[in-house]
Length: 495
Image (tube, rainbow, N blue to C red; front, top):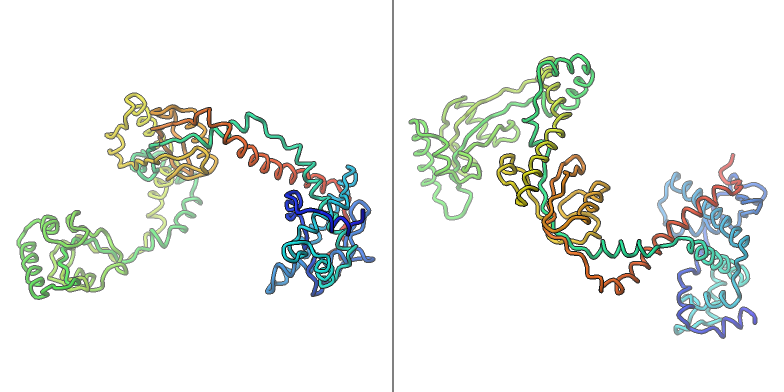
């Protein structure tokens, strides 16, 4: 039976529709031209002695340029040209291997694949006239197009044959099912290194040894941190009482009078922190009005001017700002200055040693927490609160998820999940985990495995997914190996 007869007689079967994914217009967009620089004797390349012609290369390149769109620069155009030839070489290597293995595509298979292409249909059915008109618009003869389509189907067959070697065992399916359907709930304590820097002990001898042995490292650290830590702007340490006037319905005169009264009490000797906690309408009230140390450029200019006029250790007059009326206690004023390297070297050495040793100190504290946690089964709040350590509850999640809620992902998190998978509800994991420089102590609050009766329902879908992933990976590796062993000569871009 001829190809056209097959086209006329083939059915709208599921298998035919399945082939749509293989087809069709991969290299079918005409128009434009491409450089043939470096191509010799009508050849863009040879693969195991078989020619890839300039015409094949040009057609594939025009298609790729069309898909890439306009606006490519010279480097991008050159890269697209190289990748296009790589695609053709790879395709030719695979076609050669398919034929070596004795694979072939029948006329019936080819007809079904073409019939399934929407572009060749009219009223959702294959139409020969539409098919031929479409080929003519694309500047393809029937024989040329059908030869190309047959090759594409042959490549699909090759992929299917090779992928059969990518096996998924029953044990792998069961393990994946168990993982994806196990629900856990974790509580973990985070041990940030910054919380333990103050606990790292550095002796004078260790500091002096580092000063001698790593002078260049200390200088590099100084240069790196110069603007942030050593080229210091003018800074103020202030306490403040704020009475706001930037809200509706406020009598500014009355507010100012209250501020004057507070300033008078402070100057008469009343405890400024107590006054701030009682009267201030700023968030700093709970801290006794302590604003901390602020650079001049981070401070309201009116406050900076008032602080300069008041002087360190004194109470200011009432100052009006955009937020309201404020009274200041000026703790200190530090003029802008540069800390020279020689003055900073000793502290830099200490800081370097602390950073190098802090992980060990944090891990030791984590071990103390874990020991107490495991012994009693209850989080040792006194140890956790003593350092203000963050405690996080994940809530329920699946072991098949990509990571742990509220926790960094990556290989270390995968190790944690592997340990969680083996744990029981209420179990505290015996060892701390370090993920991206942070140490964690973990309790498995809940661990609910799926019922065996559910396995049959979920196994089929999991097997299909695992097989697809395994096959794709297996075929890609096989293809790369095949291409590496091929005798390929590229004329495009040579000379």
